[in-house]
Length: 605
Image (cartoon, rainbow, N blue to C red):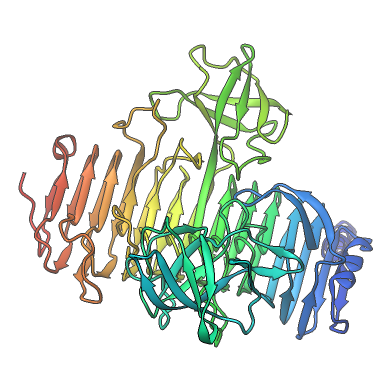
């Protein structure tokens, strides 16, 4: 080897050593509360590359000495949060659990990662000693007198009855003012109960009866649970999402592998403005042997204005009180046109306040009502933060001359490619998957069972303001079993239906290019596809079998509900069931609808 090659080899070896060098911090169990140990380890780290290595054991974390920091957390409640693992501005962070179990107590946020260039979390399990839940078995119902009776669980739970009111979770002097968001579950299967509806309860009074039974009066209650079901409450909507188990903001190159979450005071995994995420071999589900009805208080996974590749693979999500995954951008509303290059925008939903919609260098779409389509593209040259609701955005080029107050903007730069494969999502509230990104979406080889629509594609310039329309979706080789069993109508295996504000054209095409292919569907109710304002749908090679596990809730619904659609093809599918109302199609959709070579159902124009 000549001298020059030896020099090059030496430099490469030095570079490799520098790249791989990191501060390794070993943490072993010992104290009853490990919060201070972890906090000191992170705050005293001397390197920008750190690795926290835990011995396999149980670690307990209390809020008393946690790092307290004001945090904006999208789809949660903003405010001062007590954070156990606060990891900010690292070049790389690794957390190796080696099978450790982390038990948290009270109002804490377990992990918050901010502005980290590389994140790896492996081989840990997260749980709470006392869940933020009130639940019990329904023992009697009297709709005429507006009461029901339940026997609340006591072992492992914390609540009290005082002057006719239930206080829970009653942990560290914290309690909710009412039962709030409440849902019924099947005691044996732990699924949301067949036909169940979301309720918000604020009882008029509560009486203590014999044998630990409570009689709860609520004059506003419209739908009562069935005797024998499990009733679960999580507190008022505006107060019951303290923080996710993992919050990752403005970071990149993130991997979670063999991470299990049994409970969290909000979502399981939340990612905001993060570039590249993998969730592998992980799970959110109720611990084996537990009598709890739920795992996390909200979504299993949630992605807000992320980019790069998102991969969720070989994971299991069960028991959470919202979606399996929600992937979306954010619409902001034009509040004021300041000059030819600058607008003031507003975050409309109360759980989006403080969210960074755009930064310098981001490309943005202008969407001008009544047309909901993405319009002109411009690049942000400056973003001036006014407060947690308003931001002034200045663009490199002049804004459209016809832009007006009430129009919306969508961030073009921060959209991901999304893949989910080999996952199981079931026994939870809401949808299995709800997703909005214009880039490639692949949902394949998953086992799915849902309370509401299994897969929902819905951008909305109303209420949640989650953008935007999809343009390239493949849903294939999945197994849908027992879906849409909640009580609300208009749910389906696949539902594509935008929700746009009243200033927008409610018939204009919105979503595009969806392939629903080679899936197996076994469910009791009728509606398989619900599509509205969709341009380009192929439903091909699917096997659909109507089961007798439950009675259809909407026996008059059609298999295929198609309105305001263009270029829809339904071909080579097999149907085995009793439904005779196959299609509900409007005149606009009929013009380009193709139905051919199916077995078990027909289409007549």
